[in-house]
Length: 375
Image 1 (cartoon, rainbow, N blue to C red):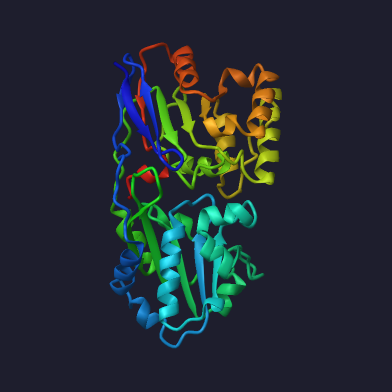
Image 2: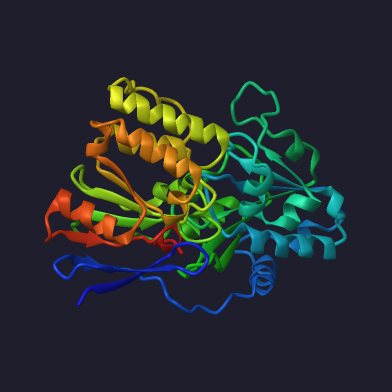
């Protein structure tokens, strides 16, 4: 009998069945039924009792304009529910909605627009508030204050809960209150906990969390984390920032919904250019030097390291960009030896069997960015 495995995939999850001969390890499985958290209650409690420093009620007293720093596509979190709850708290504290602005950081792929922005931050945030990328204030240092932060008298930040959270924040940015959002392991994005306080206090608390090293494995099966964070390959790749390290011989299989294609136009062009360069053996080794991490760079590093990579996506297979990808791979014999696109579960297991034989060690971890040990 095959071994059942529920993936954080799309809006409802995806059940697959690993072959009997595979040695399967699932440290933190996705649960089929998880009660939806009350985001408003989580946010209110966290803002009222921060780890250090005054609560939001005191910080917001007499303030007129709020700027909220949020992670971009390289720092995914269940922003939609948390940000909506935070806005309601700010409005209750007499800050006008028109004076609440959101700034994405580091925004290495440009501004989040349209459907992409709604998927990440929610329709209420995108439709009712200013949302734009981090802009340097023009100072001599790269970390110069964004002008919206400089003009705001209340400066907040919302980022995913990570043991190394300090890496996600701009250096020297004056932030009065940081909210770190932990995510549950259900197929749908649901916040599980919120830590608030000064950036130093929150980072210190999250830094106490230690991640157990992954068990030895031949294949790592990760996912884009489920809806809404796996509607495109670009979104799904963001989860790769937090996958456990593997040996150079370990295959990475990334499962994602992909119903909206590859991603933004910029990412899609860069993606196809990268694949063509990889086929020609013309990618320079220093391409990533000095660049902030983003999903495209994460994919570049994987391909440059000569790891085998398998994309498993039913939705992308039904999208015209999936057809373009299959066509390009059909014309790329060298690249196709270690980069494969599978539309059906049978193709997934067949390809892994071709690369590793029938008896290999499969680590289904972390099942998307929601499975990270920090949450």
